[in-house]
Length: 64
Image 1 (cartoon, one colour):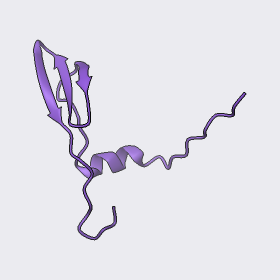
Image 2 (cartoon, rainbow, N blue to C red; image 1 turned 45 degrees about the horizontal axis):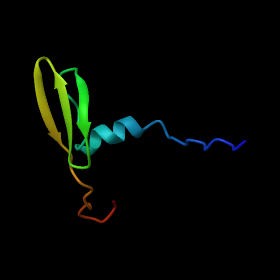
Image 3 (cartoon, rainbow, N blue to C red; image 1 turned 90 degrees about the horizontal axis):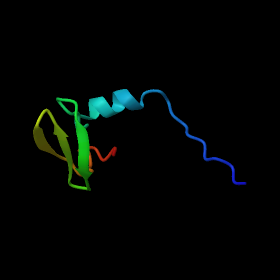
Image 4 (spheres, rainbow, N blue to C red; image 1 turned 180 degrees about the vertical axis):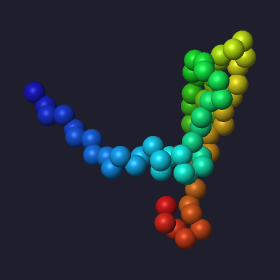
């Protein structure tokens, strides 16, 4: 049997994601009905919305 891969985290991942300003956070609860590299399609409250995804971008100081 193969050993499991370990997951290493600092505990700051959630805050780092929020501070990045590019997290996709739905305004209403619903169900994800489609996703790809460009968008997430969410269905809920009798409405369907498309949330565009931002591609990776370099910072102005090349720290990312």
